[in-house]
Image (cartoon, rainbow, N blue to C red):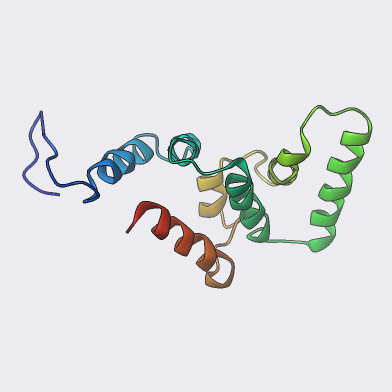
Length: 139
């Protein structure tokens, strides 16, 4: 978009993308944070299962030792047995953040984990997400 001023008015027919532009600005307003994306998805009526699917996909992008990944899964399961209060629907998120906590440096945000090559996007894993994202935002 070019020629923008201090105040801009988006005008167009229904279903031409005005809301998508505003949502994109919202998502890009906090670089590296997934929260604007999640809130946009929920506002569009996407379910928690769809969002959990994103976290499951991110687990597939982990780079490194499979034995450590399996240990993370076992540790998260054991924590649940000991009373960790996470809900089953958030298991993938618990595994992802536990795994990130065990990296060097520990606890990177998702975008920084990609930059550090701890999460390695591959077309085979991400193509389904990209197709879903394009359908959702009609891009």
